[in-house]
Length: 191
Image: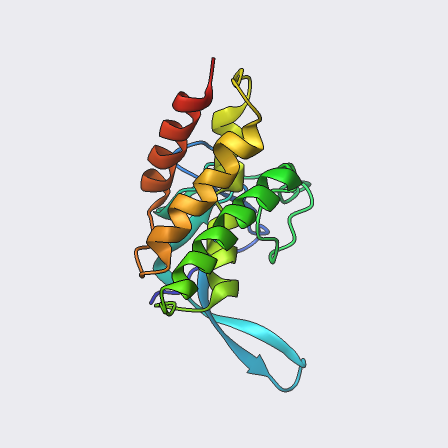
């Protein structure tokens, strides 16, 4: 585990210049980083105590385990639009995409339970939370495409089912693997 600072070095009489952390793949600053926190009794709040070396991810392109790029930002620079740190998906993600991914996952979970299976590596909440993180990627890949049927029925729901079927046995897909599943479904459902 390593720790990091968000301020660039400056001379003793200058204020530190703010830094924007960005995805090296898409250039977005809508990024997150995992780490550890400790409870601070004095402030009655959680304080970051360390960041994991491979804990960065991009909400915009859905890539994980990335090395963030630093860019000096202006003093009046703002964080990504409405960037609450606890949001599971992008605010522009279609809620129906999320709903139909979850419906597909529910089908997979019901079939898994009917066979007497148990979830490996977490519970239903963790599985669904991990699964719907792919919704922005699914929407991005489907944007501007003409579908033979209904996108939610032909792509989002089957995506949720197929990925959940793998996840219930502990096979969590990388963003690239999830994108390959989505691309195949989109290719089969477009005009």
